[in-house]
Length: 570
Image (cartoon, rainbow, N blue to C red):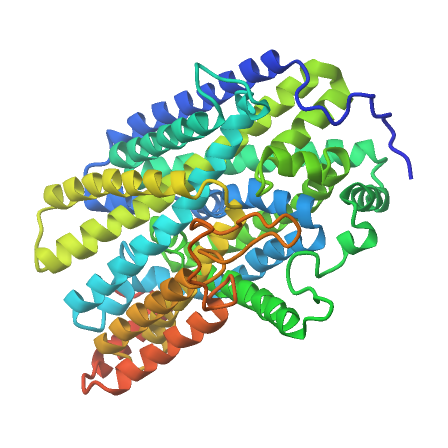
């Protein structure tokens, strides 16, 4: 197995023509931010009503919304995290891609039903047939929690990206800032930008941001995948063999068990825990997608249920193509950059794609090629982060304004101007919380953080959506029990899991948990709570429903007709 391009002696050193690459990258990122801010202020002038802010006036077609769904779904976890996981762990990193894609098989049959039933937020679906105050309060708590968890992944991704972008990963400084200070500044800057997008442009700005991001992401990924395959003579076998050799793990790098579900010699209990953790991860990824608030609200931006289903079909096609390209990018990074260099730059592997871009650009077109391709990938990654961050901020602020303020505090009779003001203020508050939390969690892999958000969404939101649409007996008590039970179980299991404390590197003894090494409150052995939390969420919803005498049979009949036909959905 040989490369078509001979590797130069200095391959393995980071940064060819460092100054040029930084100038190009910063210039392209600034250009993207400038264009999207111009779009935001342009469409912000047409955002006058609640339906404009929450649902973009329902004026987007299925193709546009399909692109926007792709942009909303393919986050920093997809572009940076998954490729990084593949580069560090081989086949096991690709499990995230499989879970993310299979999940859309559940989204497709529900897209039309959810569009016909809801109006602006997830809470609209169960509130149609239950007492609104209690239902909306519970759904707001769940929406904000899931959105903030997902936001952390985007903010962590931008911190890792910027340290490479401005060259402080090698121990240098940028504008007097070392790596930690530069990461913090980047997180704050992106947080401010996402607040601006939401406050001034609402869903219209978020949609156009997602469309632009989707086009850039797919085009940039296709270009990089083509260049990587070209270096290996378009021979996938050579690419995989080279990645296995560079990993130091050999053939095991291409087989299951390197990161998830692997056997531990002489420790059958830990081997079982590893397998259960893998099942828990996949379960959360597959079941969580349809329950993500920022994905659900995208179906409200199209005119009717048929357009919602068509947009889901288009998103599935585009997302499937992208995840195939993550295989090439991840194994290409392993082969050409090497896991050691990737882990040295960022322990979570979040900079694997930018490092790969700089490497293959240099191999193909010299230092200038490396600078330009790194700049292009950095701009695409920034677009990915900003688009998803804006969507998440919008979903949570919409729930606070529409559900908590509009229907709980104002009894369903707020003025539109009041509700929109609260939505904008809520966006600023959510952004501030996300900034503070992201600074604390910046060393975690972004794909891993997203996996946690998916598990919480599946445990707290999915039971409510499914039972509201398909169970005649379901009521407000069931909503409360399901949301709080699933949400509480997820958060408690996370608190007492290895994610928070008690996890150390088996060889170096390095602390791998969020809390300091001297804190050890680990009681739950799995890193992903979905295997236990999701059944608890469904069980609590059933118990809460059966213990209440409340009936909503008439409203259920009306909801079924509306969800299937769209009658009254307007």
